[in-house]
Amino acid sequence: MRNIQLTIEYDGSRYDGWQKQPGSKSAVTIQDKIEDVLSKMEGETVEVVGAARTEAGVHAYHQIANFKTDSDMKVYEIKHYLNRFLPRDIAVVEALEVPERFHASFNAKSFVYEYKISIGEVPSVFDRKYNYYCFKRPDVAKMKEAAKALIGTHDFKAFSDNKRMKKSTIREIYSLDVYGDDKEVLITVHGDDFWPHMVRIIVGTLLQAGLGEIEPEDMAKILESKDREKAGPTAEAKGLFLSEVMYI
Image 1 (tube, rainbow, N blue to C red):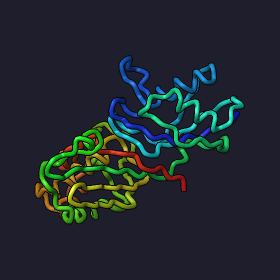
Image 2: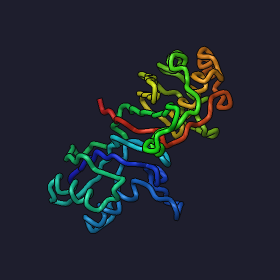
Image 3: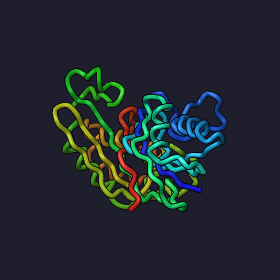
Image 4: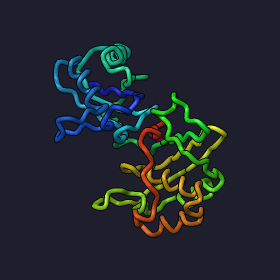
């Protein structure tokens, strides 16, 4: 049986995240759409495994997935078939045949996310679906200073919305960069793993530092508190992009 790896980009605006939700009759996910097309191609049910379980409304430049098939179609034919029948807000940019043991999720070593914030005087009508608009101009220097406290291995329980989380909340953030110009603030975070809403809570808390609602040195105290109530709000999903999945 062949193992096919897909590199996928998508606009998550109208989807309930990446992962299918068997218990819901109304949820529509990226995984659902791709599996539907592949199942028609194969003539039988196909299961697709994604590297990252992006949330409702979150986008991806570079999601990785894989599926098993007995098809003798060439990989470029599979890619073309998918792009022909998938909705226009989902695109397969690459298809590769990979070793049978490759698993998009289990083999992933780290993930990179980007969050886009518009700060111009007038929000662009063309960015409204993909950028969070901040009505005040944040102090990027303070955001950068606050971000330093999160780099490294820490217990990020304060940045989890799931109060019943049974898994370890210890994660490692390799880098957390904040870039700003006259029109946009871009936050890029690279870490070993993230749970739902974690990046968006980090962004919301960094914005608090940039807007003077907390001091940069408060970030370390929030981290140490392990208390979600101490961290900032969960930033809107529309500004978040999965930009890379790393396997080395």
